[in-house]
Length: 263
Image (cartoon, rainbow, N blue to C red; front, side):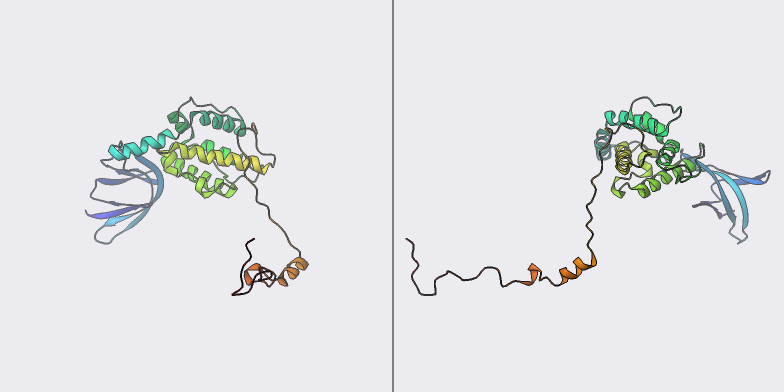
């Protein structure tokens, strides 16, 4: 029967061979989809036929989503230029810092852009990294679940990006979630981690761990403070933009019609 199923942010037509059957206290949603990449999770299912009858159930779902294919032509040239920006030497430095900062028996990845991406793409290491820059009990990310669900992994990456920006990393230095998740721009991921290390080194609050030569300190602005008396004195001064009678004058100049002595 024609109708619609709403799963989270997805609207799925019932004619696409979607079936629901009870299993214990939950409902299992099974959907067939021609595309390959799949996301998993749990949400509320609102569905019903075109007659207007709707039901409300909690379901666990597995939704198929579009998978990006290989690039060709101009797109491939652009992607190649992006990949050329990736720095393998910088990768080694970032791995050294992350391992030193997070501590514990963290497994190091093999060298290479793809291995570096797989090492970070579930978001767990990134969340541990940003939490290590805060005192105990004040970590910005309270729970870091170990999960294979794509939604949850991308959510952890998003939480890291929000926490990094709140920590002091500039918005222009923040990578997009797909840059890491799909490996489209790992150079942007390196740029974010470098900016995070620079901010941590500049704060110098005792939470940075690692070699101080790995990052550059950020330039600090010089803010001047004036007393109320100084501000009142400044109000009595005439600004240069208002003009002055103490500037250039005609003193020493010859009058009109008179000869000018050259020698």
